[in-house]
Image (cartoon, rainbow, N blue to C red):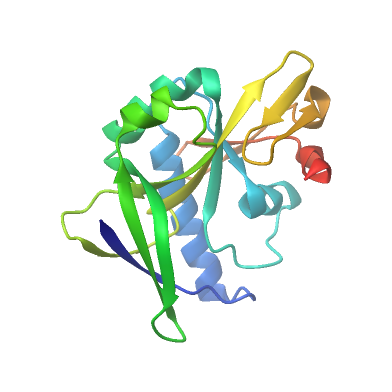
Length: 190
């Protein structure tokens, strides 16, 4: 069991928060670097990258991979010093911080059981009580499935036409890494 203390993110972006977001995106770029598996940035960060500006301060990073790439992705997660966790509790401990309670999940369980549609990935640290230093320390992870002319979004139990997910845009970061962002028209199906 891991106890995670994470900051509560305000809704408006100050200059300092914008700089922290840029730093966190560089860390996300380091996470996706070094794999042949396509890792897609989805959710609020994908919207901000596509629009070229952020309307709110995203509290986390959401990523997605195709189910067929899951084995390679799990190996990549472990090679980067992360592990899979499942949230089992949550409480506010102050106006600025939340406490999440997580249990660890073996990556073999993720590979063998496709009912895990949505998970979290945590940067491993030795302490059972961990403070989230940035949004790239705890990532929300979603599975996708290719159904020919459609993409099945497993977490939402819906299929969207492939042309609403593709083409993929590549957003380059200062560290030379590219973040893959799908066509955001898929969000209209959620």
